[in-house]
Image (cartoon, rainbow, N blue to C red; front, top):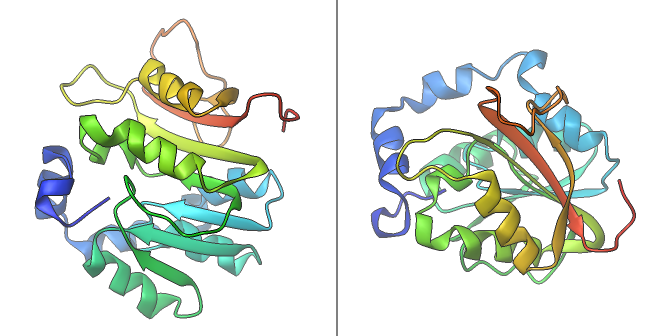
Length: 203
């Protein structure tokens, strides 16, 4: 995600302009709001990269649970809020389509519709950069809303982008609490996809 207008989608620009960050953060103050962290922790990672971390809610919750967490985002105003809340977590301001951290993680996660807020033409690059930061036996996890609206990201496009960088689908759910996903498309409007390197053990 980004605060730089030429690097982000019109969808993100509209969301960011309409969103009060205080109100946004207040939505995630209960344990019920930590479904992403619950699912990620279910894989037992020692390190997680929260790609498109925004104000840091997922990375901060993972850190609270004892998981080494790093957050990356292009919106420095949102990152500043994350830094104030968790100064001992590493926060990096960078474009997800080009970032390089020179290290890998057990899980690289893109919760919160990150891919929907990227421009169409850079989504494959975002997947490639995120996959490049996944450890050999690690996982790439992304959750996003499904729709037929212009500029939406599709599961087929996501799977294709993952396949291009040597990753295959390991799990897909309709929610972060692992509700079954209907692959026949009879109404699921959200998907959580877990990809692994081709040939890696099934998590």
